[in-house]
Length: 103
Image (cartoon, rainbow, N blue to C red; front, top):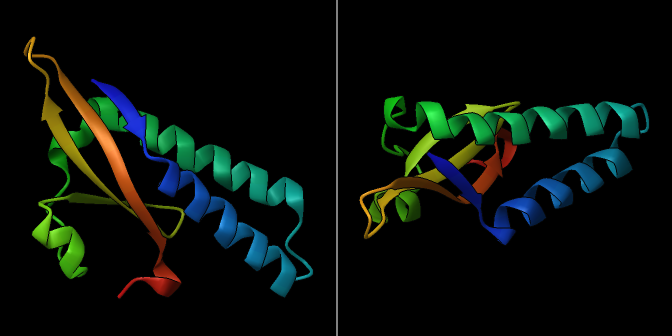
């Protein structure tokens, strides 16, 4: 399946790591870039594994929208699988939140 990532997800990742680097002087940009690369690799892998992850369990907004959820690098990602008119399935990642802010 193709994977589409909403702009809000990109913004959440950037925002979190900018704040993290400002608060933790030992967290360097090279480390952050490696973490971000792993996050995007994991999101791309949803094209293969999206159907195995559970429905969101904690965030009421995610639950009400029927999002599934997976976790990578302490980030929780909310996504849905859509079926296009031609029958092709796609994955769209709608939201992300770091575990420290997940409630």
